[in-house]
Length: 294
Image (tube, rainbow, N blue to C red; front, side, top):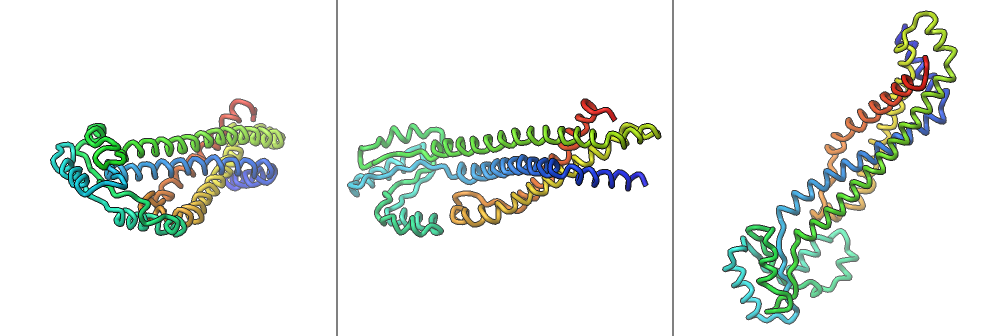
């Protein structure tokens, strides 16, 4: 009987303050959705680091007017260098073929790129990737047929710095939204308690414990938090289906960025649900203890 009463009070409370309940649910959903997005981005960054840093190379791009003798000299020096673990030569045709494969899902880009636009190069894997400067000094740009020497590791450091910044910004916005959701939950609980003060006073007079009178309000907040979490998970699913799997299909197939697997969303969903229910319930309990006398 008591369980039925508590559940009926929860349903009544959610309906009575419908506008504020909807606002609370939406704010919670946005904050939890951003948190989930931040976690997915963090996972993608980790996967990208494993993909790219294991393949870090130094690219020695050759000049347009490089001679066969200069090309052979560069290869000979690479062969004898103790800093070089392995290397491959890539002609203009091979570079363009690789470019076509990587951007096969973007035909406009491929069509607007001339076959001779990509330079021939040597792609060098170093024994110690941190000793890039040694190779750069050994093959100075503008000399002996070398156009430029590029360290992919330096580019990756800048890329991942940018991605980490995007992740941190997303999480920061999520925290601000979470604070707004907590304040809204607090105001909603205070309003609900004020509207039902006569009922709770009668319950206390007939012997109901303080916890028993507080429980419906805490459950209201927890249910709203759970609904917000479910909406957040639904938003992540839609983002994967409509944006990641479609818009980013080309880079994913080319191996440029890792895919977002359903397993990642399945792992994040319980975290989002627990955060939504836990934070809402705790906020309601603290509000009742500090600001409301039941």
